[in-house]
Image (cartoon, rainbow, N blue to C red; front, side, top):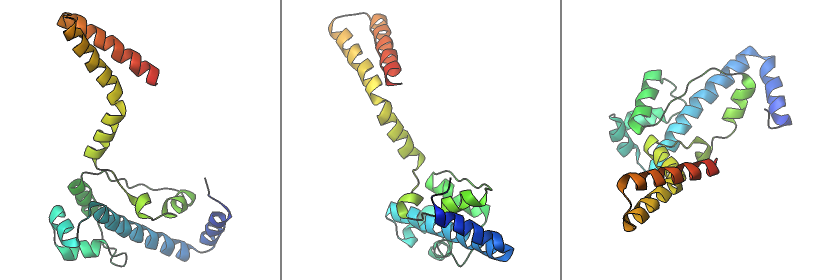
Length: 167
């Protein structure tokens, strides 16, 4: 679960003081959200003004969303950002070891999120060979003057075989 000794040291440090632990949690949650919103905007190649237009708000609001010192975000605001960008939002409680692991990497790559249309496109491309094989069978059947139902039956059989082999 932990990456190493430094994580264990950090956990022990957090365990010594409730005030420090609370401050650490608050700072990292606020900063993490602000950094992720900035990373989302950067990944889209948008200025704050353009991003604001996409969110249906103003540039000054986007500036505050990206400011870890502001920290006045509501769950509703986060949901609005998620729906405007067509991404999901997950908010959940966790243990400190899980928290330390999650906040360890705030690089743009670690904070990248894939919109649903990109996910569908990627998953469709991953499964495309089976359907392409079925399309080839249908074309071949057409050339050989097979009936439509025989061609579809052959394509379904080939598609099932390819799918089974892929698993």
